[in-house]
Image (cartoon, rainbow, N blue to C red; front, side, top):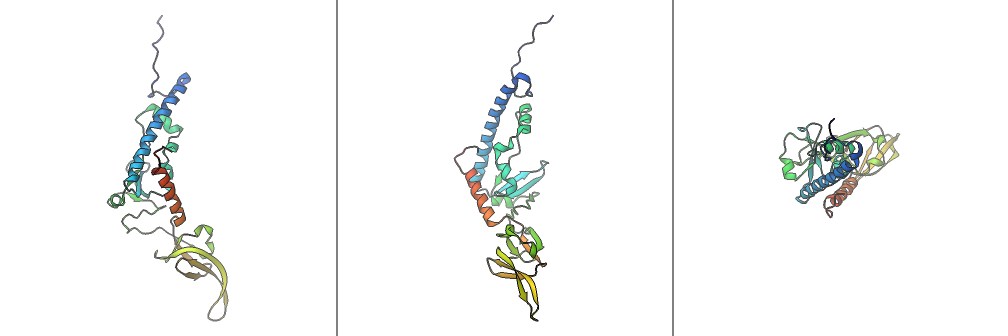
Length: 228
């Protein structure tokens, strides 16, 4: 008969099982809190250095994408506490060296020198000023409240002004024949088109959305240093 096995000291490298789940959960909570504090501190340093852009990685470590800092698609990447979900915590429990990729916050100069990095189609980072604008074409009758604040453009992307309002009306041509038309009021003038005519807008966040996200960004990365 053999004696009892020696007691084993709980180790974060092992997967949580049985009665030691509570201990391991506390240990992981403490480790996550330290990691998040380090991540937030790194983001704050980048922001304080004048960063305007962020580089994120995709499914492959070689896939990188450039975003404006206020881009909606990276908002969750900057909220580090929410990134550490249960699946990530389990991986951390089995490997304390595991980390979730952290966006690299960079300046415009650094962004302009990057090569082999894709540009986000949501925010159009355009650090060099020479990238084509993301355009969207739709019929004039399809304009809705969600398009107020977007830039109305020529087919080649040249701005006509920011959409202020629009409305349907009845017009008369040179021969006195009445027809329906859409009057679009922009920040620079008035454009009149037919309901079925195609109009072009910059498929980007409105100025109001961008300003709101920038304010949220300042609150998150230029605050008092808390992880939240």
